[in-house]
Image 1 (cartoon, rainbow, N blue to C red):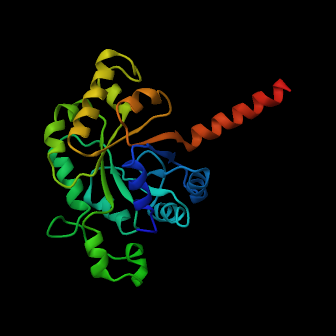
Image 2: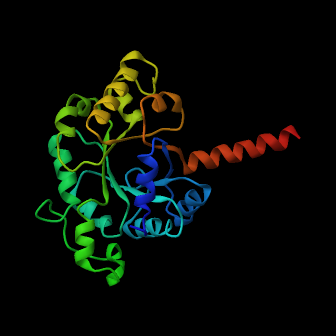
Image 3: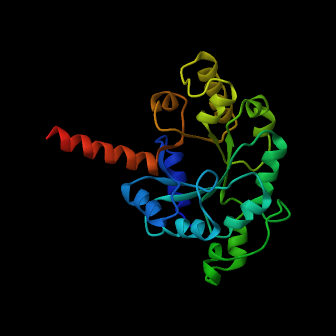
Length: 255
């Protein structure tokens, strides 16, 4: 939809050129607007680790309208109610964390699709332009959006990767390198053979399944480029601010 720039995101992610994202944790929607204005292809609005409430979520999703940036919202958990709280605001995609098995994946997909394919409730709001769009038209569109983006970020999920990827209706897998390495007892040891091999394995499986491959990290980009990542969040708001402030202090002292 035009309100969330999903078409622009998919065109970039499927072109062979990686779609770049910025991660937002602050509640002020101007931060998401800034991410869009900076030139990112998508914004990762974090309702899991951030401090978003329902109203903040809607304002952040609204902040990308009129830009070229797509809006993705991460819910706190694989939970029908949590997904229902934001889906009618019209995000380009919903990111569901800590998917462990096929049952988790199935619940996530069903929560994002109307009956008979799923269990999504009929509470039309911003997704139909507050009534400007015909509901029947949106009903057809909703068979394919928002994107179902599931996070693989635990070694147990890796063990179940084939059954997870076998669930119909998944659009993309977003790897969480931090949590995944931590679940292996090797937190942030990116180049440990076991850790790197696990990332390679998941990436290969996702590609073989024909799904979009995503990741979220603030360094070590080269390895993920080699893995064929289609979309990646490369910086978070507080990290970018800290880096900018420290650089400003350093630049002043050098002069």
